[in-house]
Length: 180
Image 1 (cartoon, rainbow, N blue to C red):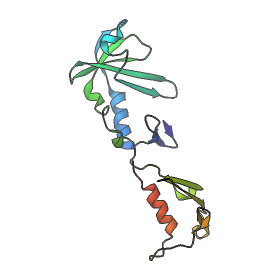
Image 2 (cartoon, rainbow, N blue to C red):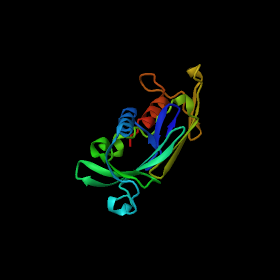
Image 3 (tube, one colour):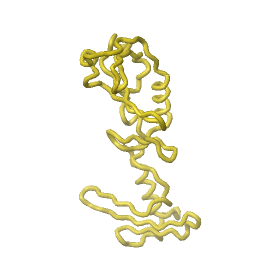
Image 4 (cartoon, rainbow, N blue to C red):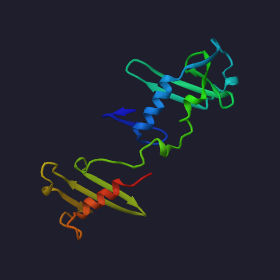
């Protein structure tokens, strides 16, 4: 899924996708070519592993929506049976085009749990170890000196460390630095 120039995975977990990884995957998909045509009107999809495919890659453009099903390997390590969902045509594709299939999620999804500019946040709720911490932010991007920060209703705007840094901003940086 794409939004605001950012790629997002929606399942099995929700998160931003690493652009380089997704572009490599998309290139592999768009450049994959049929190695061999097996059957044009296949009736027994089970023998190809396409009744319950090993992988189902959904794709959508402005004009086309579809799903590429990948079944059993035909020749181990060389090619895999495939078909477009709704079709009866079975083909083989080179397995080399799909090296990303078994990539761990942490190599695909950006490692940061959630990254957003502090000026776009008005409230943060952290539930951890049975405690809930509610932070409220009133920021002014044009004049950061007017920013106000509250933790559990208490104004913490003036709290600074020995380097004169606002403690709440350090806390915020730590929160957005949390990784999966």
